[in-house]
Amino acid sequence: MKVLIAEDDLNTRNGLAEILEAEGYRPVLARDGREALALVQREQPDFICLDIMMPGVNGYDVCREIRRHNATVPIIFLSAKSEEIDKILGLELGADDFIVKPFGVKEVVARIRAVTRRCLAARPATRGAAPFKLRDLEVFSDELRARRGREVIELSLRDVKILELLHQNRGKAVSRDAFFNHCWGLEHIPNSRTLDQHIAQLRKRIERDSRNPTIITTVHGVGYRYDG
Image (cartoon, rainbow, N blue to C red; front, side, top):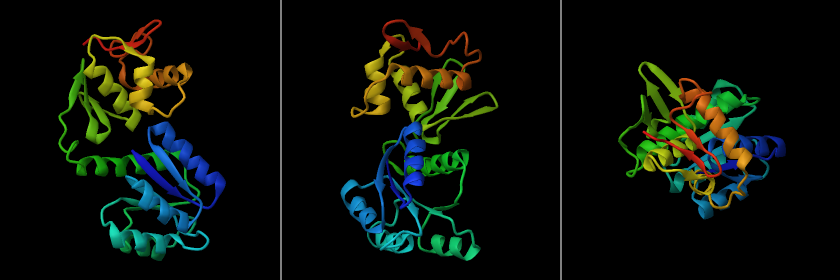
């Protein structure tokens, strides 16, 4: 899933890109409003994170221009302005959400996941997608969630892709290259440590005992497997 980040501050722009990449998105970066409008046309992002106070063309004007041609692409405003009138104006222009700077990683992740759920629900290919089970864990891909009884487990976009791949290859060892191609993308430079760290963190959330996993088992020298 492709996300346009339009933000003139380098640190904020790169910080958001890092957060999104960790979640499993492909960030596309713009330094100002004009570049953002050009990238919207060229890249056709799935949703947009849009700073308000940018040089040249500000975020409000970028939003107006986008809405002239696309009424549905989700837009999240990013702003140091916290006045209620600013939020109201942003929402009236067609934004879906408004995040006030400075913001924490958990807040950004929660809002990004909420927008992603709306994106997935709107796609014919994923709308009403059937949940699938990994032992006693039920995975709801279009909700970015899993459930075990009454317990609800929040998942990232990349978590869902990993679990889908394991489920689709039940009983078969999935190679590291297959994980990277499906869950990170072909342009990603493979790094075994990256995969192992992600699997370790995912196990902590979905396994009953992460030290003795039964959903994601290690296949030494190959990758991982779900035995069913």
